[in-house]
Amino acid sequence: MRKSVVLITGAGGEIGHALVRGLAEGSNVITLDVNPLDPQVAPFVRREFTGSITDTNLLDRILAEFEVDCVFHLAALLSTRAEFTPVTAHHVNVEGTLNLLEFAQREGESHGRNVVFIYPSSIAAYGLPDLETKGRAGRVNEDQFAHPTTMYGCNKLYCEELGRYYARHYKQLSVDVAPRVDFRAIRFPGLISATTVPSGGTSDYAPEMIHAAAKGEPYACFVRPDTTIPFMAMPDAALAIRKLATAPRERLTRTAYNIRGFSRSAAEIRETVLAAFPAAEITYKIDGKRQGIVDSWPADVDDTAARADWGFSPEYDFERAFREYLIPTIGNYYRS
Ligand code: AKB
View: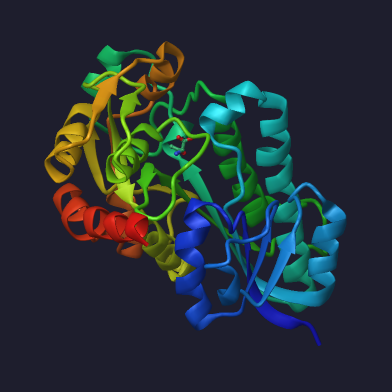
C-alpha cells in the first residue's frame, strides 16, 4: 500500500519555510528540493527528496512510493535570476511544472481521486507598457495587461494556462481518460518574510531593506522612491495557500486569483523601516534594468474574486505587518 501524503516542491524556499510547519500539523508532508532542507524545517517532514523537478525518474520514484493527494508546486527561478539564464529558467519553470502536472495526473489516475495542484503565480504575469498607464490603471484585475516583460512572467502566465489544460481539457480526444488535476493558482504580490531573505527576485528590495536594517547593515535600494507594487506578509501567503487548497471546487470561478496585503512605495517602506530601526542607513542606487521590470508590474491588484470565491482576506495590513510581525519577529531572529 502506498502512503497518502501531500508533496511540496521547492520546500526549502521562502514560501516553503512558511508552509511546511502549518501543513505538517494536519497532513503527512513529503518534499522535493534541489538542496537539503534547513534543519529547522526538516523535522516536520515525513520524507525529504533532494533533487530537481526536471528529473522525471525521481518523480517516478515518488509516484511508486506515495499516494499524493495534493501538490504544492513552489519550485521556481525568480524574475531577476531568470533574466540572466532565460533558457534554464524556462526549463525549470515550464518543463518542471509540466512534469509535475503529468505526475499529478498519473497520481490521480492511479488512486482514482483528483489531485489538488496549488501553483504560485505572480504579479510578474502582468506587463504594463509605461508608467503613465501604470498610474492610471489602479487595481488591475486578472484579465488585464497580461503581457509580461520577463521570462519568469511569461513562464508563470503560460503555466497558468497549462494548469487549466490539465484541469479541463487533458487528452480531450481520448474516450477513456479523465482530467485528474484540480489546478488552482494564486498570483502573489511581492512577499516579505521576517525569517527568510529572498534571492533572485525583483520585488526583493523591500525585504532586503528590512533585513539589512535589522542586522545593522547599510542598504542601497535598487528602485526609485516612488516605485509602487503590492506586497504581502509571509504568514498571509501561507494562509492563502492553505485556504485555496481546501476551498470547495464548485465555488472556484477562475484558474488564477490575485491576492494582496498592501500597496506601498519604496519611500513609504523606507520611512517605516527607519522609524523602527532609527540607526538604519538606507540610500538609493537605481538599477535601471530591474527598475524597468518593477515599473511593468501593477501598482496594485484587484482581489475581489479571491474574496468572493474562497473568502480570502489578509490578516496583515501595512501597519500591522510591521508592528506585529516583521519588527518583533525579525529582532528575535537576528538575536538568536
Ligand atoms: C520576484 O520578484 O520575482 C517574485 C515575484 C514578484 O514573483 N518575488
